[in-house]
Length: 148
Image (cartoon, rainbow, N blue to C red; front, side, top):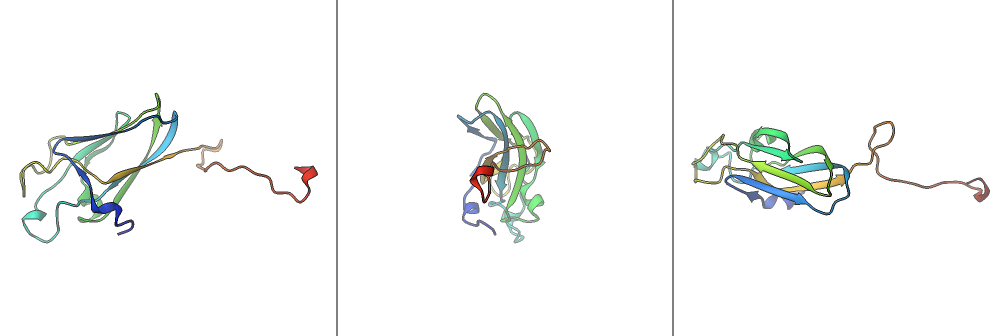
């Protein structure tokens, strides 16, 4: 698993998780959400019976509905990265993961079937006039300083 150390711990909630990016510059950002199913197994034991379904909102807009990490990754313990574009206004980025009442509620244990979240990567998106994405770079290469 790439970045396997990143995927050794997760945040888990029976109902919802909310994350805020505060004091950000207003503008467009690329938001990458990192997931891996770390509770369920694929070994045909009692721990393999659950299904986790939840919704994900970024800036109040639903970006994933009935998201199933295990199905998306094609098995438990495998990373899934979902990438979205978000516009920050009022210097705050809000990410909300919410269990909407679907999926398992009591196998193998009660209360662990809400959203599960590994982490987030946020990068500022700089757009060129032709709408392609580039990082910011500036400079001049010349042999003669008088022509620069």
